Length: 97
Image 1 (spheres, rainbow, N blue to C red):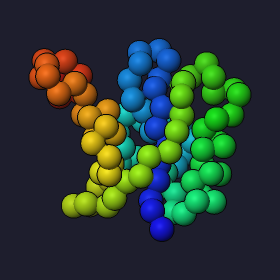
Image 2: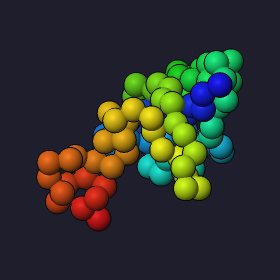
Image 3: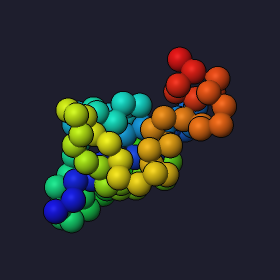
Image 4: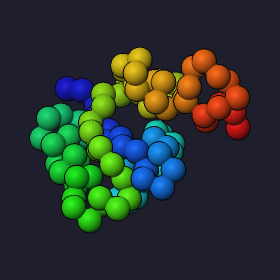
């Protein structure tokens, strides 16, 4: 089975966030609550799609991740970019500091 986490964008600043074990949102993918399997992923997405969260985040969806070197890493390149920020301007995004 594949491991999945929920990601979305925070409405206040547009940053990529991940659903945490406590039910909050973090910019750090390693604080994500991980679902293992389809049913667990569907339940996680349903929680993240609750109507009361419409004022906090937008567009929640599941992404596949892998455990690597003690951390979570997205399996798709698009999601890797979303977790790191823009790839053409190193002075912008998360890598700027």
